[in-house]
Image (cartoon, rainbow, N blue to C red):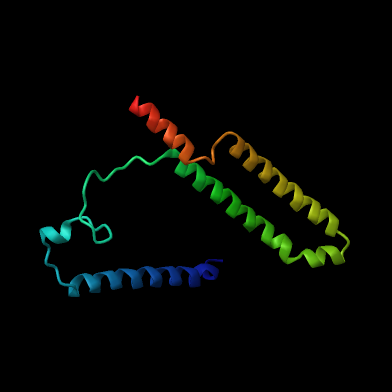
Length: 135
């Protein structure tokens, strides 16, 4: 029983050893000359200015979340699309198409709801909030 897992244990030990030996060797041969300039934050070649924490507009996260939802939708649809010919050959093509249509329909309703609630508007709400701040 234990011999069945011996190859896995040996593989894990060798993997960890390879990483640790690599880190140790590079730590020994690299030059170590710290300076104040090297300790600064590197931001695309620009000198850092202002605080490191910036508050982003919450709409950015909502748009990113919607993107992830529709990206994951493709992950769920692709396997069905890849074997759709087999579904048709076995007589289940209409069922597979209906299931995918319902899935896309639910996501479409969710997107229309988000659109209707103004979740996809960016600039209009920003200009309104700037006017409110000015007054």
